Image 1 (tube, one colour):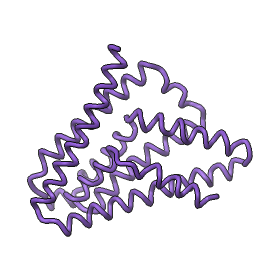
Image 2 (cartoon, helix red, strand yellow):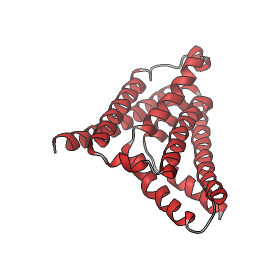
Image 3 (cartoon, rainbow, N blue to C red):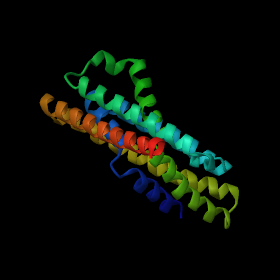
Image 4 (cartoon, rainbow, N blue to C red):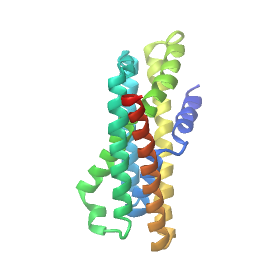
Length: 206
């Protein structure tokens, strides 16, 4: 049962989205640690969502004002990150690679992307909320915590795999190809940002 929840965590993280695109960008530019920190930041937001759902506070996300804010702020974060990725694709600064501020920025990027992504929030409400409803009717709090940890462990394993793949590509590809990957990641992030912005527009003016 625990292993099945680990697989669930992996399957939840595997679809291509803003977090994976950001990990790819950070990994090819700065290496494993920066890509992994993007994932750790996203996991911190996921842990917050899991706690809020467990406490029954996730229902407040259904308010139109809250949804509009999340779509709008999520669009800003993604567009800003995408533009920054394209703008900084021309080179890799080793000094930035080892700086603490750059590491904190990678963590902050992942955290804000996951925290302000309404799809991520609704996803956790739908998937984890239904799992919690099923498991809580049959198991005690310790087992609920154990199975929730299995989901979290699966997410962590996927983040490590993504960081390894991105940093491995950094070592194998030429500078021109690495810039192409970084630009492509930036375009993907901007594409998600435009989609979020459109959803915000529909929520506000629709």
